[in-house]
Image (cartoon, rainbow, N blue to C red):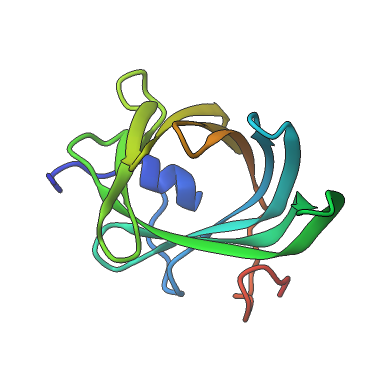
Length: 184
């Protein structure tokens, strides 16, 4: 990993333009709403996830990624075959580290294992991750100053999924919430 470049992507995710002088308060966190559609192509079922993603500085030039919200996913109770829907909380966490280019960051699992590269430039907007025995392919698209999306196309012998996420920047708040998904 080459840390010589300041990260334009990091600034975008935090919502802190590089020209802004540092504030005397706590580091700014980037808060984004997330809406995800989930399609299991093999089963023909669709689900959703809605919630909040928080990008927060980690003190080493990188970011912490925390997502929390509610997932709605159809289930099938076997052998009766009764259709049901699971609705419940879901969370996940990742680490983002500066990459060798200012328009990308390397995303890691919380234990430090590599996951994929995140970026919006043509050179960094697509990546893939092998999770034996399935392949995860991701494409990122920046839709403007306050919105971006990414799509995971998961294929293999165990999974056949299409996961489409749209993130929209939430307005900055003056107070820090005590819970990531709550309002101050």
